Image (cartoon, rainbow, N blue to C red; front, side):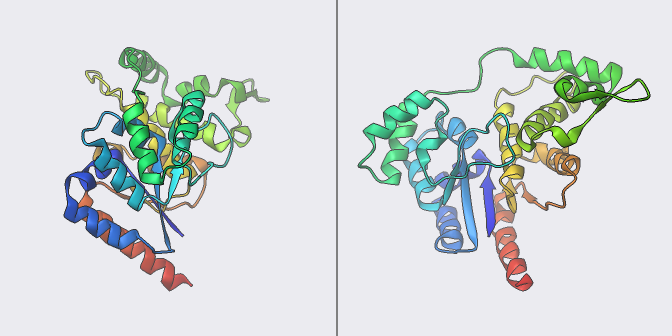
Length: 263
């Protein structure tokens, strides 16, 4: 099974280009070797998008499964077929569950987009990131990792604290390391986009949900956040990362062909 996760800009591209949507739909629909995922960070981003009904149609017709908000810990991601699981507010989720009980998936998604008002935090998180960046500049990235995972530091026989990664649950590790690496590549004059938090959650989601193809913004590929986190997990996981829509379908088809060849 080849799992596909798309950055929000790719969903918007499909909504704005009916011909591309038709091509994507033809490629993935009814193919038992493909599972298209739609994640909570996508949902949060698209709440602010125009033509939400069109977005709901694209998602309902192409997404096979949904990824709820990334939990704080654990080693497995609860992939589900329930679109309402995308909503981070559980009380609001339950309210909409009751209101949409008799509706189909597309209608439920339309109501979700119209009714929700979640967004990226409005506090100045850029200032906080730059404060941590100064720690990296002075002491190095490993010192920042020690701060992020202070509960897992163990005093060695050499009198130095060491990080015991084996005790850290995979999801907690990925959540924190994505932020550590983001801080590590922060430019001194950069004003971080609040939506970066959603992008980082999407990167972590792609790894923990064991995606085969991940379509993401080029800036995250340029700093190799995905590759660094996979390397830190000490796994042989291989994710094909694409940054342009023109590469998406060929990459998916190539993955399917590779899987068929391995059988």
